[in-house]
Image (cartoon, rainbow, N blue to C red; front, side, top):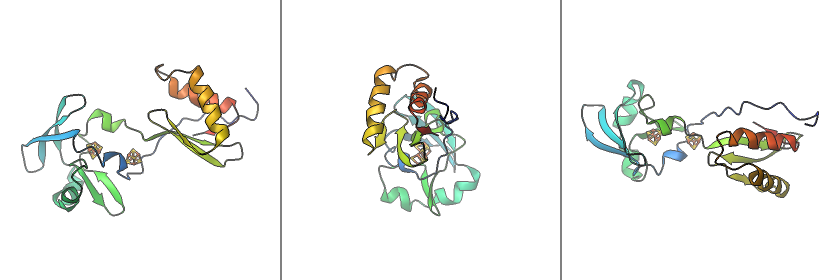
Length: 166
Ligand code: SF4
Ligand code: SF4
């Protein structure tokens, strides 16, 4: 490994609560019935997982305003605007795939720190940089997406090629 490679990074992901990933989840997070003032029996349709959700106590006021879901029928029924954010109002009770979802798993920069692109949770590269796209294509040939540590190994591959990843 080259000496000037930057330390492999924990690849921590911070959700900015932009709500983009929840805007088309209305068909996937289904409310089956209301069982209390702020309690719902729900189903995560893609995995047929049934769960009970109670609106987070600190979000009951914003949940009660239905202007947003009325205007955005494709959005998850539990998504609400809160200032500049779009927030999940069942953060505590949301299904596991929501809790672990990450829209970006790797941010890639060149050795000087110039941002080049991102890798999404589906291990797809989004970058206009031709060199990085080429290297990413090589990396994907060497490291199948199906291996459990694919994300870490792809990150290491980029590091070894002199990129910064975080
Ligand atoms: S996971 Fe990504 S898309 Fe979804 S709210 Fe967070 S930052 Fe936005
Ligand atoms: S339950 Fe919460 S995190 Fe999951 S799609 Fe709905 S608003 Fe988004």
